[in-house]
Image 1 (cartoon, helix red, strand yellow):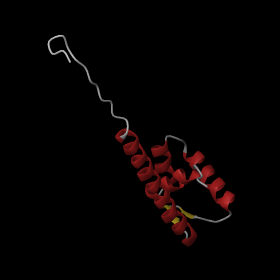
Image 2: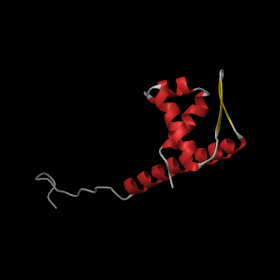
Image 3: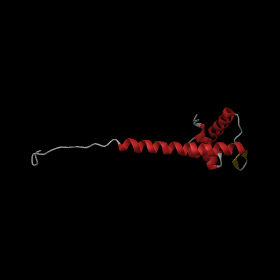
Image 4: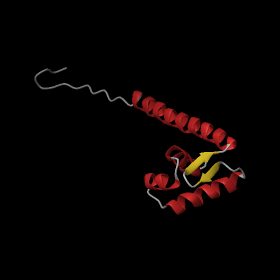
Length: 103
């Protein structure tokens, strides 16, 4: 099942920092850290190594990161395909006559 904390996790890893991820997500660094702690506690797996210079992935974190990226990309493609399909069948066809060219 999709967990919204995956978005925070992906942003932290892509930015390699809680502070930079917080700026991108428009929340505080403390909120990002709490979300990551909550996510790790929820799945009961350590995903991130915290260092003074930033963050890095644990071996388990690498797997979750790879799969989360796939899920997000696949979800975006699915939504784009669904929108294209809905537009394909939503065509309006008008037929009419005028006084100058009666039917």
